[in-house]
Length: 281
Image (tube, rainbow, N blue to C red; front, side, top):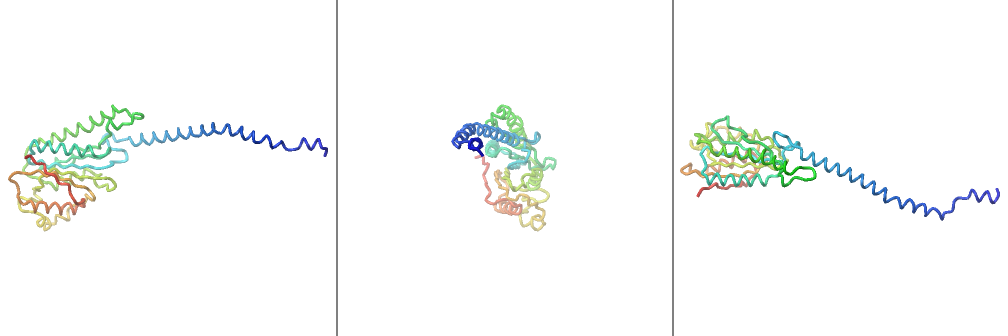
């Protein structure tokens, strides 16, 4: 092979390759920017999709499509009407409980009533998002606020006002009314979410089944097989009792308290109840 031919077949000088690499290197930031932009758009799409999904709710119950995130069940024993100061304090405490409840909390309100037709949940809706918490990028804060007020706060206030102005009743079936409310609030049995039961009551059970006025407390209840009839469906539920003092009513407070301690223990509720008095003096 001639020297000239060998020269033509010789590999290109290695001195040119760094320049080629530098040329490719100058283009790499552009490709990197494109890749990051695409990834950012994809991530943003996922972000917005997740937030839109999280904001989806049932139009009837206002609950998240995945179900309530917590539960607050309220039972009002107004078989003896409360005084105006007691009603005002009750409103204040319930208002605070609702304000502190997270968005998506099921709020249900029931009544202790001599009429079985009034048992169950008179109000049952989830707390929606407030306008102040709306994300202006994907939500309309004004519409969010209107939903919160018109579909949640106003109906709740109306139900509470109606219940606070009911006439006096001749019996007080607390246990029965409570069980009816619990049965119409299924999420109170969902142990994976926070749950709370608030009772505004004088705690004086009085029905055909059991009456403290007939001297029937826990011993009498146990002898008639009452504990076996309890559902035990308050497992892990926190209990707040707003005690309503009644002038001239039953004086055996120790026996009353002992009954409810046994009752909630068998029902599975958490101990250490939060007990407050709705006084009027």
